[in-house]
Image (cartoon, rainbow, N blue to C red):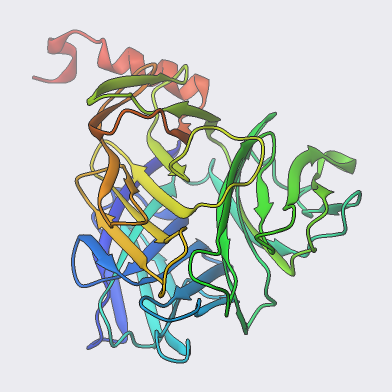
Length: 410
């Protein structure tokens, strides 16, 4: 098929097969963003292990992290590599699972488990397709000191959307300390969120941030300023990341560039009480990516260790989230959550309860509506990435929907 198409999916990993296939997409994937949590079923559990990955048929990149629960000091680790999925074990934070993309198939994709997962993991994903007009590219770059810039090397692709994940670790290596982050950029709009929990620190030593105007936040030190990356136009129609702030440079920032779609990046807020709220984007989204640190907008990092990522299409929605408790205590407390009923969940990091949660209510020609089923009275900012067909394809789609009934063959 031609024209942008997308679907949201979710699956449980299997330990009894080397190949695991997923289909019924209605199109051949061009690219995938996936995020995952280590848990036996949907809901909230203790412990924090997860990851984020970008996939194309030519290249994949994934990050993984682990933050132990119930330890006298923080026990955190991170890993990055050229893989589709990575996982870390609780004890020793050794590699516990690894998958590569075996193939992008006519109606889905197949993963090859080079390290089979011996524990249950829930994997959420958004798959994008629509050849030949849709193109995707995955790549990774190292950051530069503040005041410098890093070219993404994309002169041959017009990136309508960039998704970015930074990790302060080299490819194929594991390091102490947890750093989670995700960002998005489309034209002049960009937003990023993330948090960090150092290894061997007193329980509650965390820092988090969410900010517009940049697509990368690297939080290496809870007591220091972050490293900020903003996507700018570079030479010869290339894109570059301009670095600012006083944080330490990061070894690896991975990106997924998509061409051939209409995209809008922005922020909105939850309702203060349970209820519906519409986010207007100016077109009909085929897919929505959401992420949030669960607080109001703030120009400065704060002592919160929480991130939730959600995705939705007209067929399905769901989210996963991870957090580290942010108060002093005699031991750490960490949580992980997954849901197929909610598009976003904001966990109370201290109790494991829920501050707020939202389900996808509807998608229409001007945007999407979230139903905030729970809300504790605070306005909590979330970032969104709305993805749809280019304008000319939308005109054709609307014309087809408005044809008389007898013209449709009924």
